[in-house]
Length: 182
Image (cartoon, rainbow, N blue to C red; front, side):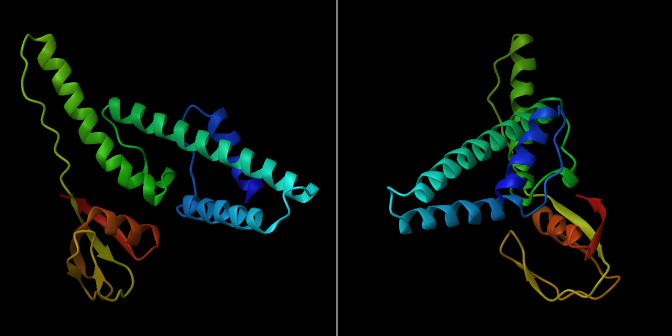
């Protein structure tokens, strides 16, 4: 994982655009960091192996922290331009973050416009959950949606309106395709 983290970190810093990450990148990175932490507990701190592990942990933490920070800045920049990052480039966690960044950015832009026009209106940030209409490409058993409501079971060619978070995951897994967003 260290090698993958390094390559991902380097690629992200060399690119102006948001680079594509595997959807499970952060979960694997968290597992890796946990594994390093556990290994460190079992080693005699005076050994060379412990010193190497300490260095690996320090470097991995720095790269992961910087990677998250630079990706966050890119997401914010995209949102302030009134756009959305392509879901193909985002991890599952970043998709959820993007749904909260965009309304805040829109509210900030509205606040700025009103202020420049000489009006001070109350700031209104709406973080509504969106539903997405999807068509099922494969049979899917009943799921519990992000809104904690049950959905399904679904058969091939069924069409349903699902919370955006669930629709995105199912789409990435090749189980659905998006028809339209509400």
